[in-house]
Figure 1 (cartoon, protein in one colour):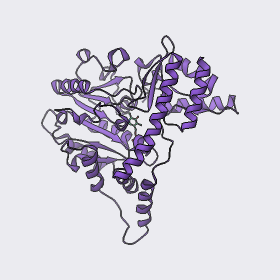
Figure 2: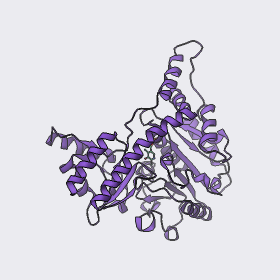
Figure 3: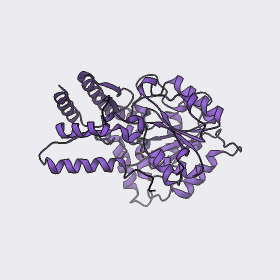
Length: 389
Ligand SMILES: *Cc1c(COP(=O)(O)O)cnc(C)c1O
C-alpha cells in the first residue's frame, strides 16, 4: 500500500480547495475539477425509483435479494438497447454498483500475479487497484504513452506483451475516443499476444462522431475483451450507483476455461447484487423517453465542453477532447501541471485537475471538466479569458 501515491487524487484537490477558501473566504470558487455530474435527472427516472421504493412497504411489492448478476429486465435492456445487433445474451451482462467496483473485482478475479498495461495518461484506478491487490513489481505495469502527436494511441510495436490491457475510451483525461482503425489494431495486438482487454466505456454515450461506442463493434473482440460501463456519467447516477460489465462467453483463458464463469463466481461471492432501487432507475433510463431525457442533459454538458474548448483555443492554447467527452485536455508547453493548476486557482478561483496525476505523459497538461451548470461554466470561461488576455 505504501507504493500508492499519497492519497486519492481528488482528496488532494479538495485539500487545495479548502486552503484556497480559507485564504479567500469571499471568492466564488468554480469547479472544473472532479468529474461529477451536477444537473438533475429526468423525472421519469426518479419516479421509477420512487415507485419501486414505495412498493417495498407493501406486502405484495416487497422484494429481498435479487440475482447477484442483476435483474433480468435490466440485463436484457442493456443487451438489446446498448449492444444492439451484437448478439449478446442477457447472461453475459452483469449489473454492478458502478464501474469503479467492477475494476476492482476484475483485478480480484485475475489475481496479483499478472502483468498489466495502461494508457499513459489514464484514469488512476487501474494501477491503484492493482497495487492494492499486491501487484507491486514495478515491471508488472506497462505505461503505454498516448500523446497528441500520435493521435492519443500507443505505438503498439514498442509495447511488451502483458496479460491484461486496460483501455479507456473516450479516455479520461484526454477526452480522445479511439477510432475504429485504432481499436482494430488494439484487438489484433491482444489476439496475437493472448492478452485480455478490459475496456472502460464509461463515457461512450458522449461520442458524437462515428468512433465506435463499444469495443464489441470490432470483429474478433469477443474472444479478447471485457467491457465495463456505468450509468454514472451518462445518466447522472454518480450518487445513486449503477454500472455493468459485459463478459462474452467466447472469452477464455489460455487453458480454455471461460472467463465468464470466474466472474460469475466473483460476483456471487464478493458482491451480492446492485441496489434494486437503482436498478429500477436504470431500467427507466433505457426506455425511449428515458434516453431522450438523458440526451437532453448530456447536450448541456456537451455545450459546456464546446465553450471550454473555444475559450482555451481563443487564448491560443492547444486543446484536445471536448467533442466525444465531457473533458477538455489543455496543453501548457514547458509548464508543470501543478504550477498551472495553482496559478489558475489563485487568479481565477477556478479548480482544474493537474494532468500529471493521470500518468507521466500528462505533465504539462490540465484536465477541465464540463460537468457544471451552464452559468458557472460561462463565468469560468470569462475569468479564464481575462487571466490569459
Ligand atoms: C467516473 C469513472 C468511472 C467510475 O464510475 P462509477 O460507475 O461511478 O464507479 C470509471 N471509469 C472512468 C474512466 C471514470 O471516469
